[in-house]
View 1 (spheres, helix red, strand yellow):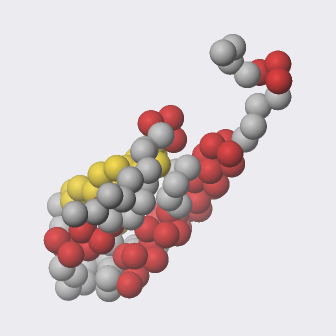
View 2 (cartoon, rainbow, N blue to C red; view 1 turned 90 degrees about the vertical axis):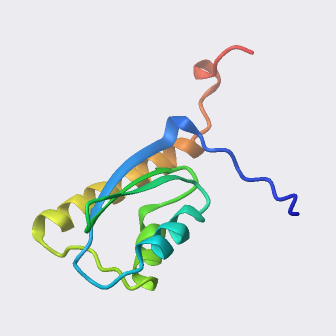
Length: 113
């Protein structure tokens, strides 16, 4: 029995991502369990055979960490221009969300206690 405390997900920073995978022989259940084990992952769902729908807390987890798990599991991402544009957009919004989660507001912008 473990007394590990899971960090809570911050609902303000939950992002939804759809990743299209290239067709390869991948154990879907193993890949899903590895992704669900990541700190900050809220949900992992398969949309058909080649598309993953992920929801994660961007204040704890970044897209590049997810991609690293995919590559280690033998799954490859689509390489088309639109897919690369989408990944760039996802990375930018992940970074903005990450930065926003660590921003300390100025005194006049703090909510009253």
